[in-house]
Length: 187
Image 1 (tube, one colour):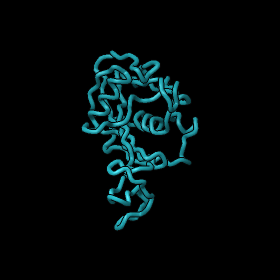
Image 2 (cartoon, helix red, strand yellow; image 1 turned 60 degrees about the horizontal axis):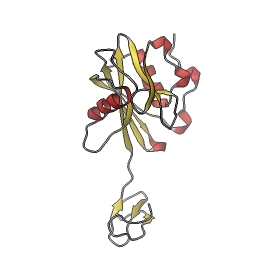
Image 3 (cartoon, one colour; image 1 turned 45 degrees about the vertical axis):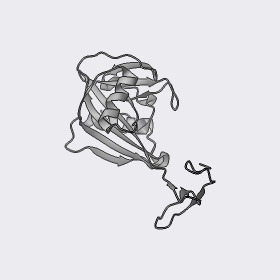
Image 4 (cartoon, one colour; image 1 turned 120 degrees about the horizontal axis):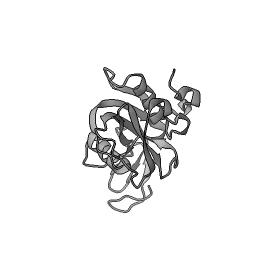
């Protein structure tokens, strides 16, 4: 950010009075521009024991498999965002059953929220952001081709216990990228 969106004055990177973090601040009108984490919402949709995955048609990680998920829009709830993203990426209508995981990824300023969901009918197809969409039996999930550690970890936890008593809440830090051995479910 270089200029204030209100008065067009050049902004400064400083700690505002009463704060403890650097922020972009306009020296002319004293507006503070906060840069907060972005929320990604999606579903772990299951039909007949199989999980719905999408092969990404966009960067980052184009060509890799992921759960249907994406950035939440202003004016929608996390559940609405998860349902919309599932519709957009997989042309699938699902029923959310519970919050499954909430993962903070501080080094990229994101929070990933996944809901457990039922796919009542095996009706789905590729949306604009997906190369293909497929239902995978647990033993057929392409673990070494998953796009993101949050997807990997959430799927592993889901397969261990799809209906936990409480949602899984954890962080993924830069040094915690999962190896292929860690990503594969235990037999």
